[in-house]
Image (cartoon, rainbow, N blue to C red; front, side):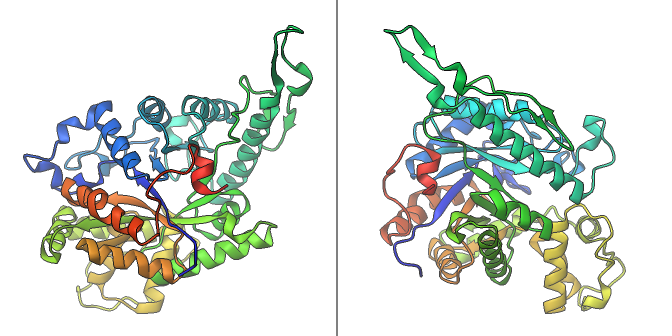
Length: 434
């Protein structure tokens, strides 16, 4: 394990413990999911545990999976959600999600800077290129991954220029001379590129803490190049230890090749954990959370993720590299497709094993099931192997799973010196060591 290094830990502000049929339990509290007070309570729990940040994903479309038997309110605007939470918390970071495919960069820059002001330096930006939603913006079909990332590069460049266009130093507040601001320091950016033409400057000055940190989640080859060039942290898809070691090593190498220090980028997978007092109870939670995934549903998900049709194959049949479809065919998520292709090529799993993979039944998250000690050891194993710099907490199965995380697992990490026992800073940049 690396000396004098602590984990970076965020908390997903979604009721992940209600996935599957968990919401049907009489005490699930599912009726509270449409109340801002519910999310404020979660935010305060995470801040009490001294976590680095809260995170909220965003969806700009309604998929069939969001309706019917799934406890899901779709996706409220995460930036507005965090604006409310900013007034109820003091230290914890607030990482919102803004798509570069369907938004004007000026609006995004202004909203992010506004959240940074409202939270006193605690905002972060999760940069996404989106994988669906073009129909809602008059831009169907979805652009290719190459086009989306080219747009994302220019979009991010424009946002950063806008943040710099109105520096904090432009506010002088000199009562004697009568000068409140220095107009010479506020400059237009005059950006003219392939995708955007933006004059600037931004309508509000930078925050004294610096710019909002940048997060990104692309793990495909083109996504890795983009993330390693500018992101402070990566929300990584790594369903197993092997993929995690490879991804983190590759991202650090790419960052160095682009003139950055490899430690300047933190690799943070989603940790979808099922905690209980016994392993049997935890396994039961896990099975219940996935009970709604029928074989037909899993087969449909596999076709969407990989373009592979295994219907008609026996559960015990082996799936090999020879079964894999053309890697260039369109798929819902190239990141998940590449992870699944690698898993099949290396392991030649059975059909049942393929249909149980996180890329098929979830979001390619790292899944850990067991007692507090089991999940703690899982975290330590990945940290010591160099697969992670931290993780995003995704409690699964029940609210009790979340309670055990806050009440027992986090204190044990602090006792081992792997996480703080008190905040040492008040901004997200300070929490991340930027």
